Picture 1 (cartoon, rainbow, N blue to C red):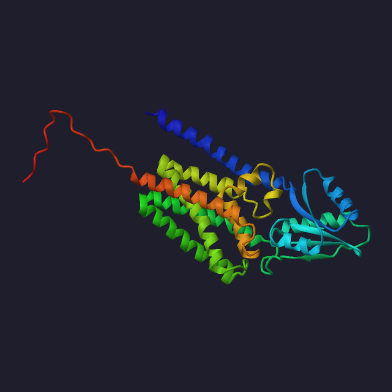
Picture 2 (tube, rainbow, N blue to C red):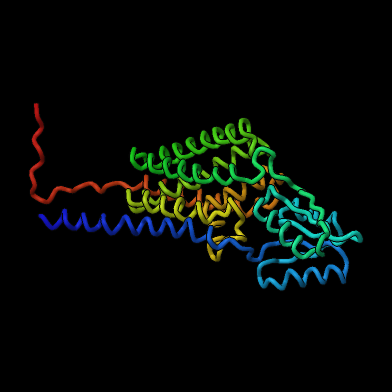
Length: 328
């Protein structure tokens, strides 16, 4: 009927702008609202100087979450364990700033600017980068750029499994195989060749593979449960929400709420945080991200296996229907 093509035309005209608007909102809104929100920082030293510094941080409302430490050694340990992003050490000669550009170059620069602005006019605040970003990626640009390709790889794997009509165990095996190979290939590129991640090679490959598997299994799981449209739903969640909400290019605590929290509950954000922990901090603070990725993998593969067990019910001939004659 003529009305059907017309309705399709109207649907296309209306749907594309809606999708583009959602994509712009998801990517631009977090970037336009970068600011500290309960950003964990430390203060090392004794009162009353430490008390005055804490009061200055608290004047910014809920921007900072202040942790107190007795001395510089304790503050360094907290930074290395990813408890805080940096710390100000109160010393007789003046304040000394400790940062960790490997955790977030953006936060390291933010703390440097904030502490310098509070220092007396003309004085310089010495800065020590306790856990420095790799020399080949000092701004963290390469690490931040790696999350989108991983999301695309996961969506592509889940889409391929769906399009090739792989089910059950074969689908799960294909997803695991794709994730393992992508993890090793990505580690060979980012670690062995570019040197932008510097941790244990196999641990990094495991993190990258687990991230791809979590995304791919989710996409294939959606498709197994609700049909081919599940691929679009999975891509929407993982790419249009998971990537910009991941906080990998800045920090989850710099994103507007609830984007930062949502991002860490999705595979791209959890994978990015886990990669930082493994690559630069010897696995510190990795438990939450590992749990998040494992849950997504388990749910996705369960849906894939459950979808593979579904069978089209056999058609029972109606009573009195003659059986087909045998040929030959």
